[in-house]
Image 1 (cartoon, rainbow, N blue to C red):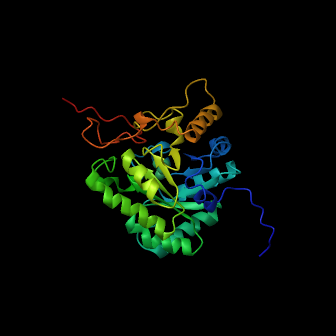
Image 2 (cartoon, rainbow, N blue to C red):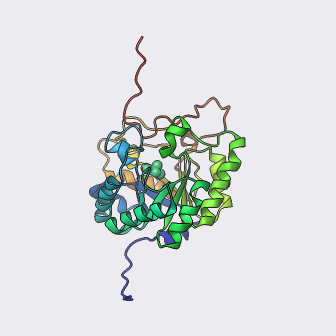
Amino acid sequence: MSIHFKRRRVMAPDIAARKGGEPIVALTAYHAHTAAIADNHCDFLLVGDSLGMVMHGHETTVPVPLELMIMHGQAVVRGSKRALVVIDMPFGTYEESPSIAFRNSAKVMKATDCGAVKLEGGRRMVETIRYLVDRGIPVMAHIGLTPQSVNVIGGFKTQGRSANEWHAIEEDARLVAEAGAFAVVLEAMAAPLAERITKSIPIPTIGIGASPCCDGQILVMEDMLGLSPEVPKFVKKFGSIGVSIDRAIGAYAREVRARTFPAAEHTYTLKDDGESGVATSIRATKKPKTPST
Ligand code: KIV
C-alpha cells in the first residue's frame, strides 16, 4: 500500500464522529451540476432511490434498478469534490442474503467510487450490516418509514405516532448501531420518538420528517427547491423563482446548523392531534386521481 493517501472527501467515520456535535447537513443529489452546488454546503450527498420518483416518474421507489443508481452515483461523484457520497441500495438488491448484499454493494462502490451505501430496515438488516461493515463497506441504515416497503405498509405512513409502536422502532435503532452502521436515517416519525432515539444511540441520526434534535437533517433536493409538484409537510421550500440554487441550499444549510429547521410545522406529534398520519405526498410525482362520479 502506498502511504500517499490524499484525503479530499468527508468519510463515513467523519460523519460518525459528529454525534452530538454541529448538525450534519445533507441533501439528495442525482446529477453532476446540482451535486457541485450542494457540495459547497453539505457534509454528505445521498444518491437516494427517490430518484426513481423524482427523476423518472415512478410512483414508488420499488422499480429502481441497480444500474440506474450506479449511473446517477457516478454523476454525483464526478460533480462533487468534498462531501461524502452515499448511494442507496435499491429494492431487491440486498435483502436476500448478506453475500448478495455484499456483491451488489461492492459493485456500486467499485463503479462509482462512492464512500458508503444505505440500506432500508432495522433488525432484519442487522446481519447484513455487520457482514458489509466487516468487509469494508460503510453502511448508513434507514428506519421509521422505509419507502421500499410501501406495498407492505399500505402507503407512505408516518411511523411511531402511537407510543405503543415506539419500542420496536427504538430497538431497530439500537440494533443497527450495534451492527456497525455509521449513521441512521429516521424518516417520517413522531418527533418525540426521534428525539428519544437520538439521545439513546451512539451514532448520528439523520432526520427527514423527524425532529430538530436529530444529529443531522436531509431533504430531497427537488422538494426543498420547490420543483416537486407536491411535498409532504416536513418539507420547507427554500427555493423559488429568482432565488439561485446556491442561495436556497445555503439557506437550508444555515437553518439546519442553527436548528431552526425543521420547525414544529415540519414535524409529526403523537396521534389524536387531528393531524393526518399519512405522509402520502412524499415525493409524489402525480396529483391523486379525483374519483369519478
Ligand atoms: O431515497 C431517498 O431520497 C432517501 C431519503 C428520503 C433519506 O432515502
